[in-house]
Structures are given as structure tokens and as C-alpha cells.
Image (cartoon, one colour):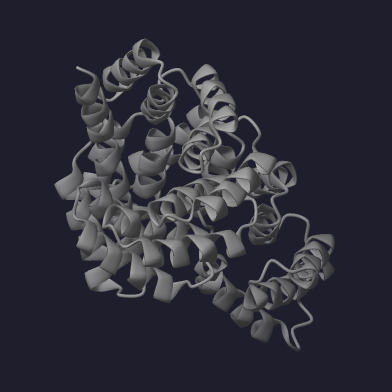
Length: 385
């Protein structure tokens, strides 16, 4: 959950007013004068709102002048949060709450506890704010996120429904509703929520990307491709989008577009094993088995025991007539992942070409046991009946 420094604007305006009142007012004590100056420093830090060392310096100087300024502790906690210094941030936000217990401080504490994996404590903090103010949208959103992390999507959905009743067009609520509905298997509701987010904000990358994935899982491949292209346009340097596009284009039978997308994904993330495997399969589909073999060996150079890569490599080597190499790769794939239907099918084809009919039948039967809808295994098994 992101924490927003701009929420301090109202308090900072108060500091501005206090500062103007202090000018030429000798009746204020030194401590009061110090706190007025601290308020100016807090204002300067909040105007930066960039998590920089300079912003942090403003808050620390403010606290040297006025140690009990809750807002300075709070803002410093947010800077430390951005820097992922969670223990130090927790110390500062707890100090702020000791001085002045405000809902925004409790929300910051809960968000930090989530980052620390202290989900039950975070749930309690969000619930405390909701009990005090049932219409606190940020608290409801935070509480739903905690339930989702606690693997309780039904309760998350209940809380998000309350948040939607408060603001039906809140992007965070709608997006989270989509995510939770997907986890619950409610694909139409998830797709509808993602679409609503995009209606409200056509440049919402996460909604476009996740909608593309949801459409793919629902078998709506053409729509999925269009939405993923939109996500690609919004964030061209996101490797996950190119990876997903490659898979969708392969499913659509457009191997040329699939190859381009997968090569782009690899260029953006040179450790991407999955895209190399998918690219290998696409190259085999294009009858470019030698190129596929090279790409799949690169994948295995990153993850030597990846059963999917070994299965695809065995397939490429099988098509190249390298039966000994193919057998080594495929038998290792099956040993590493005994339920890999594709590896069993490919191994069956190899055995069939080697004249080992019984072994081939056994592998095709295994493939169909683990994936009854695998058409290639059905055809191959039928040939031996």
C-alpha cells in the first residue's frame, strides 16, 4: 500500500499560519518558537515529498527543534518507509501515535506492519480505524488487502463491497475487487471491474495488463491481445507484458508476432527463463529447430533443472534427429516433473521412432492421465491402437 505525503497539506497550512503569527511576538517561549521553526521545516520537507535525503534531513532537523512534533515523526516514518527501512519507520510512527493518536497515523502503522508480515497486527489497526469511522475508505481498502494476504478472499470481498458503497468509482477499490474476484474464480465480475477501471482511467496500466490476462484465461484471445497491446503502449519497458503477448500470439497461431514479443521480453529481462522456453516452442512451430535448441540451452544455462525447458529441448532435438540427446533431455524432464504431460508425450514420440512400441504406449497413456485434453497425445496413442 502506498503512503501519501500530500495528505499532510491541511496540517501544513496550520503551520504556515502559526509561523505568521509568531513574527514579532515576543510573548512566545523559546520552545514555542522552536516548534514554529520546526513547522516550517516540516512544510519544506512535505513540499519535496520525494523520499530524498534532503526531505529526511528537514524532518530530523524539525525533531531536533521540537521533539514532540507528531507530524514530523509521521513524515519521517513515511520517508523511511519509501526507503524500505521498515524497523526505523515503525519506531517513528509509534512515536507519532504516542504523541497524538490520529487515524492517518494508524493507517501508516498498519501499512508498515503489512510490509513486516505482521498481518494480524495490521488487521487490528485497520479495524480500529474502521470501528471509529466506518466510512474511512483507506482503512477499508487496507483491511481488505490484509484479508487477501491472509488468504481469505471472501472477507476481502465483503470489505471491498462496503468500500464500493462509499465510492463506486474509486479506482483502488475497483481494481482490488477485480483481483479478489479472480482469486474466487469469478471471472465475469473480475473482467467487469477491470473494464470499469479503464473506463474511468484509460491510462491505468495495471488494469489493462490484468484485464488482458483475465481475458486470456477466459479464452477470449483476440480481446486479450488488444488489451495487452494497450498495456504495452502504456509501458513499453514492462517485460511481463511482452511475455504475456507472446503466449497469447502463440495461442492464436501467430508465431511471427509471438517470436517478436518474446524476444522483446528477453531483451528487457535477460534472466527470463519462461520466455526463452516459449520462444523455443515458437521456433519449433516455425520449423527452426536449430535456433530453438540454442534458445532452450540458454534457458537451461539459467535454470539447469527446469523440466519445461528440458521437455522443449528434447522436442527440438527429436525433430533434429538427435535421438540420444533428446532421450537424455526428456527422461530427465520426466524424472524432475513426473506429471508433465508434454514431456511424457514427447518421450512417447521418441520411443515410437526408436521402435519401442510398448514404452511409447506407456508414455502416451501417462500424458493423457495427467492431461486428458492433450490432443497430440490422443492422436499419438490412437496410432498405436
